[in-house]
Image (cartoon, rainbow, N blue to C red):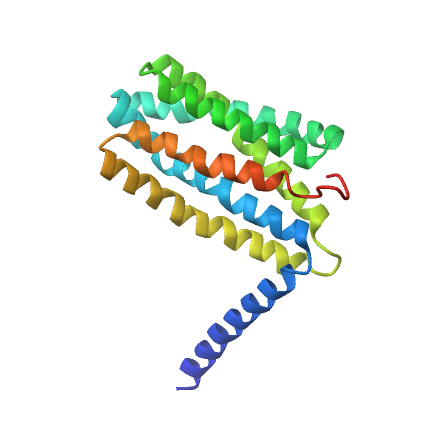
Length: 212
């Protein structure tokens, strides 16, 4: 009985902490804007991570071997690009770096959805691999800058929760669009809504004040 009460109290405590964090975040407008932006474009990442193999198989008729090769090819560019975009973040700032990668994402989706060609999809996947790690590295860098002193654990925890929630909402939207339109190509294009809206909100971070 004590164990049940203890678990219940932990659950209540967790929700209270979450509510307190939400209330506290509103004191930091730039941080709030960035978290909204991060939540939006993370939805697109969640869709691509979950559905890339399904899209390749159902829309482009990839074989299992080709799908395995697809994922293997994407590993090296991710490592190399992370180093380059880490350097770029130091040079031009995290906000500009994220903006560049989000524009790249939109162009990649347009490229992949416009051509029913396997070679184009491979190129798109390599570019996506380059962009994914880079966006996340720059996002963590900007988050670290925006977080007030002594609130690192609290707000990074909320940042993590935001990413996890997007891993549910994004794929659901893709599934619904795919089901209604009977087209995974249109469902893929729908991810641009998250990317473009995330890009727009990101531009409001530090506007007229400190540049990130």
